[in-house]
Amino acid sequence: MVESSSSGALTVMRLAQYTKADQEEILGAGEDPFGVAWTGLTWLPKEDHFGIGRHGRLVAHTGLLRLRVAIGGTETEVVGVGGVAVAPGMQGQGLARLIVTAALDHARTMGPQHALLFCRQPLIPLYQRLGWHRLDEDVLVEQPEGRLATMPLQTMVTPLRDDARWPEGSVRLFSLPM
Image (tube, rainbow, N blue to C red; front, side, top):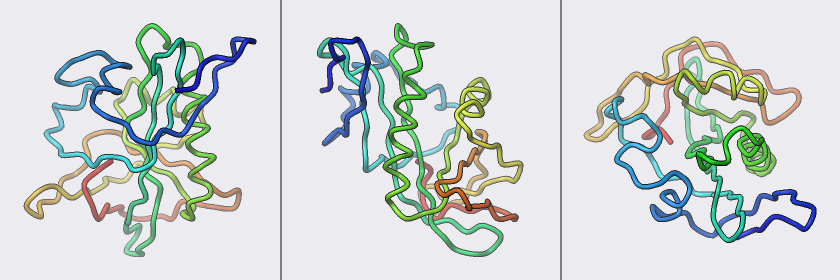
């Protein structure tokens, strides 16, 4: 866990693992901590995790996962961003910006040219302030038993390279959403 420095600045650290207990440390116990159970979707766990600690407690998290997608019929990879969480008492203090920015810095070393996330409508302005752009196209995601589902949440993307432009066309994720 990374503590705040003597100046009070919070720093992000890479986590070796991220468990259900860690998530509950940030968001508390609950059946639907991210408010997405209504989608009925099954989600993938992330592989790379970043956290912010304060006074021995985890107060923010985000995770990354490399994913295969087809955009306009062309297969490529993106870095999926998910599990963004900030403890309720710490919201509005810039922790989402800090944790997502640090995760994207790492994502830039992973190879894909874009990052992608799915979010609820109330969070769109936050991600837009962080440089993300809404996709207007429907996004198909895989679900158990080979079923395809249209993502009901807003899909947002951001470039990981200065010259990266999101291609036009329909989007299909070749996995469960992250």
